[in-house]
View 1 (cartoon, rainbow, N blue to C red):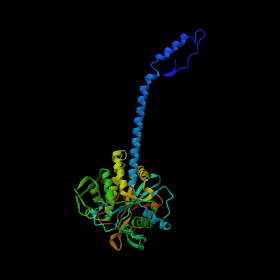
View 2 (view 1 turned 90 degrees about the vertical axis):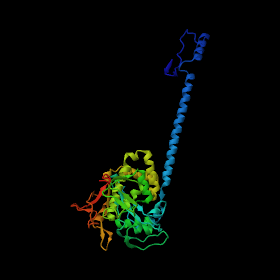
View 3 (view 1 turned 120 degrees about the vertical axis):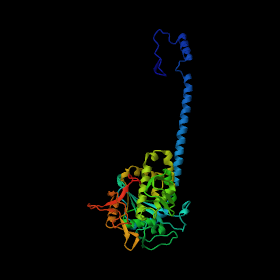
Amino acid sequence: MTDRAGTPAEPDPPAPGDGAGDGATGATGAEDAAAGTPEGPAPGKPRRHWLRWTALGVSVVLLGAAGAGWWFYRKLDGNITTDTTAADELRRYEKERPPANSSAARNILLIGSDTRSGEGNERYGRDKGTQRSDTVILLHLAAGKRSATAVSLPRDLMVTVPGCRKPDGSRTREQFAQFNLAFEVGGTACTIRTVEKLTGTRIDHHMVIDFQGFKKMVDAVDGVEVCLKEPVDDADAHLKLPAGRQTLHGEQALGFVRARKSLGNGSDTERMDRQQQFLGALVNKVQSNGVLLNPARLYPVLDAATKSITTDAGLDSLRDLYDLARSMRAIPTERVQFLTVPRRPYSYNANRDELVQPAADQLFEQLREDEPVAVEPGAKDEEREPENAGVTPSPAPTPTFTGRNAAEGVCS
């Protein structure tokens, strides 16, 4: 008798007169025990043996997967280069910097370096031991993941560059000069201090990427689509393309965002607009499920990204970058906005730029206060930089800025 399948029950108490304890009854019990039953212990051993091996196999697979995952994590985490020099220099000038954000909003300075040093970069020109910021974008991530606003700062913008520490240890004097001089003489820290002085906005983090890093990122997502109204042949940018819709990979993509004289009216403003279009399409591509939810495609993207950037200590781990990517992922592409700071030709040199006021200061104030920035597409400029470049007239007190969003794509 059993209480439940496979569980022996307690024996029933013997009834009077059954002869419990006599020899006959004892013998019978022994014979029954010896005979066993189909649910007895002997037939169950092979099953337990099989279960043990199955459990062992599953454990090995899980441990192997965990080990591989840890190896990939350590490899990607180790790819990232930390910029401690900039942090040391910025601490020296902490008292003159804008106050830190009181909200959860973050400001990240993205710097595209035109350095010719490093593997593969020598083909873009002779290394003179200096570098300039080919592209600088102030990325504002609003609190609550409401929006992301990327503001391009022209390299030809005339600004006050503070006195900065040079690579040889000497220091420069404060000077009124082109914006990209800051990166040449004082690197990332000097560029950050120049932007903070210009905008009154505290820079929380920074990333620097060079030519090779940009190309690897584009290749990792299997290219980005662009549309050209006319064929392009630009020897300086190493770019030769037919007209029409096409997908650009590393070298061609770099040439597309760097070309100036052979595309459009040759202005740096139009080049920045083209960069913004391309970055919007790149964001769209990375946010697609075909990349983020596909480990086979996601790993090369992460590998290229981590190898390509130099960051401050606040973004120098895979976890930090993952949190940043997750924040961007939560923002709808139509709320990922790109614009150029309102600018116009400099009064004393038409080949340089100056800010359009009060629009520029209004934009900087909105970023500081984490207020929404209104961005709408604007008509393409046929002439170089009209007086109100970057600003759309608006009856409201807060201006609407000319720009685009990531949902539009580069072929819009």
